[in-house]
Image (tube, rainbow, N blue to C red; front, side, top):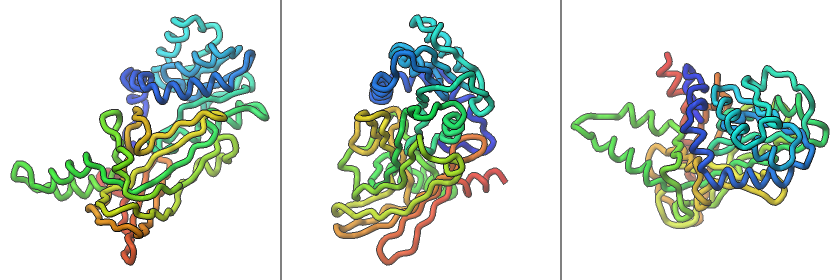
Length: 328
């Protein structure tokens, strides 16, 4: 999630529609349910960070947890209270309306569960609160759900992006939109539920950007920018107009979730980082890509990216620079 500096995060996360969408995402919610059921043991104490509707807390209670602390900073906490009561676990699920960063744990917990994932993992901006909670709340040897989250990149052709940019460049309504086009190609696109890229939209091999082990990453590293450079071998003749960015997650041993091109559609949809213009590719070509994502204030992240064709300079994109220009 990329959030402009002056926009607080709470209104979006307080909207019922956001939580309905996640609940109705059977791929996402089913995977978390299976992970919770495989990890939580009778008598465990569980912390749910950013509980939202409280559905993961209810899963934990039904899996046998003795107590579940459902921490939610927005007014969506009322949904968690209502869901726990409606499903007979109100005595197990204790909803705490507050920021986990400000709380002292009433006791140490055996399991921390948090759906902190953005379109390519850390870009939701929730990793730091989860790691702070881990350091304060989790017992030695306790379990994190998810445990390992990996960010991936590949060159793709995003038809929706192509149609939108082509429309703007065609001087619609007899007007020029050059400035809007420049802002558009420096903005990360989150499609949500309305579109998904297929495997045949991919134009290169997949390369790993970074991997985040929620059980081991130090807080200082979680607070720092994540950045990587990757080499993307081209698969075939074709045109690419974006980098696709996505995550795969090991939620629990043997239970995973992936949201890349060709994976089952989810509420995350596809996350794409546009190129300034489409590029023609040939087999055997190696394209370099750089991605950097840094925490924003007060929420979300800022992402910059660059692509270099063989023998060419880097084509740079930076969404924070665009928004700072507007903010000034």
